[in-house]
Image 1 (cartoon, one colour):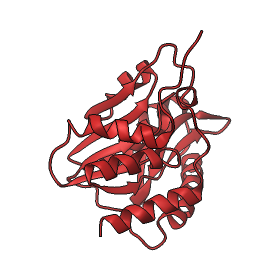
Image 2: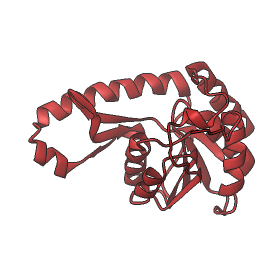
Image 3: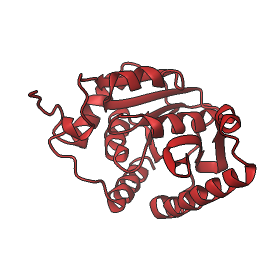
Image 4: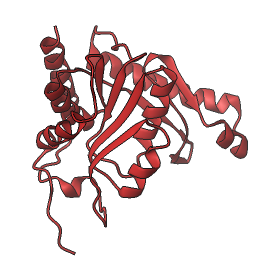
Length: 219
């Protein structure tokens, strides 16, 4: 089946996404959060267009050992831990096992926090309209985990936003956010990378550079 990429790169995707989000958000207390790493270049363009603060949102799924794609919970910035209690009961996982899994992922969060933010604290989430951005949605597991962890921090509203995603995934995510913005939902979906001309891996250095630039712009 023939198909053609929709976006040149993450920069163009972010610019197009920003135009659609601008119609849905109002007020100055807006925060754009990018999921690392590929979501950050997209989020940077959204934040710049909306003149909003930008931050990275660090979240790690708690994967079942041996079946890591099955998330039993998530840990996120600010010491947030979200567990799927029903799934934990069904699988009869011990508190000790969950503690070990969570501890490992929390150490990785701390490493990334130091790498990306340096001395900057995480930006305030409570009471704000938060736009949670990634470069695309396939299974949506990371975005779902991030939305659930964000909800614990009491934002006024959560808008999940992606340039491209699987239609079923975008629909399912509505259970965890207040609004879903998905510009393009191709059928068949193939993969996120299929809809970009350029989809090179975003580096840690690029994430750092964009966060530094956004912080300077918002001083």
